[in-house]
Each structure stands twice: as C-alpha cells, then as structure tokens.
Length: 259
View (tube, rainbow, N blue to C red):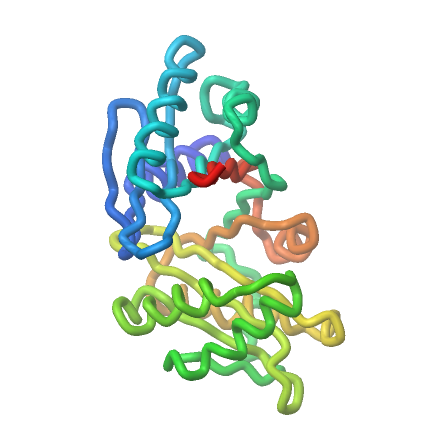
C-alpha cells in the first residue's frame, strides 16, 4: 500500500471512525468530538477538516463548549490537517502545544522475523488491577509526577473491556523494569501501542524490544493488520529498525478548563 493510501486508511479508521469505551463520540459538521465519561477525565478533538475562514470560529466554539461543561480537552492536530496553520491558531487562543510525536505504522503482513521470536526476557501479562502498581511505579520513575490517573484508567480497562486492552511488564530478576500496553479498538484494522517505558538502569537490555514483540505477536494472532504508535524521538529509531514507517507528525494541543 502506498503511503498516501495508508494515511487515508489511518485517517478513516483511527480518527473519523474512532470510538473509546470511556467517552461519548459526537460527529459535528467539520470535526469529531469525544467527551470523557469519567469524572475528571479530558475530552478530545480527534479529527477536523477546517478552512482558513472557518477554523477560528470552530476553535472558539469548542473552547466555549468544553468550558461550559467543565472539561479540559486535547485537540490532536496532524501535519496534514487543514488549514496548514491550525496549530498556530490553537496556540494563539491559549492552547499549550506539547512536544510533537511521529505517527508510526507497521504493516503486520511484513513483520520482520525478529519480532516473531519468543522473547528471552521475562515478560508477564497483567490481568488484575491489583498488579497495576508496578506499571504506575515504572511510569512515575521514568517520567516523574503522579500516574494515579493511569492506574485508574488501566484498572477501568481491565474491569470493563478486558478484551480491548492487554498490559505487559518486563522484569529483570525480581524487578519490574519496563511496561507497555496495546489497545484494540472495536471494528478496526489497527491496534495502538502505548507505554514502552523502561527504568533507566535497565535500558539497552532488550526490554523495549521484548514488549514490542509480545504485543506484535498477540496482534497478529487476533488478525490485526496494522500496529500504530505515537513515537517519541527516543523510540522512533527503534521502531524504524523493525519496519515501522512514519505517516505524519502529530501535535497534542491542550486546553485547560481552569486557565
């Protein structure tokens, strides 16, 4: 499949038709809005196709709507969205623009043999909320700050839609050292990879690759066609080594309702 065709497929599957168990999807004339159904959760604009003449009014309408409903939200903009200066317009209206990430995709029909080998590291699937403390501890150690929200989110996933989320931890000896998970949207040709965080003392030991392989193998067994991940500059070279290609650059644009 050509890159342009893959971008079109991704846009339709992962943005236009996207659904999330903990949010309500609203289809508006030129954008798609997701409203969090979790107390304290954030909403999202996952797709928009605006013009230079309609963009400012659309942005103001979403700010007003989410503010009236007391909910912060993220407008996830892509480098192929219109108008081309969408991110600059969002910034001008007070959105905090976080570091961009590369949207990477792997066609599982062409998965490299190295990802089909059984991992030599100890990888365990987390199936009960009681075991999620190790995931939270890894994320807090790697990124700083509190990740209670993540533990609560993954707890909800395991309790309410366990078939759509698989969570893994890789250990070195008795130490949980790396964590990652994979999400399977309903009626989708894609599965999305998340996490992949490793404690600094245990990096360069193949843990990231082991978690990638385990999730890729599971996705193939479930007849998923593509893996997708929003990659940081640190993980992008590793993913490219395994055949992931860059589809786009994405910009998380955050609106804090308390600002």
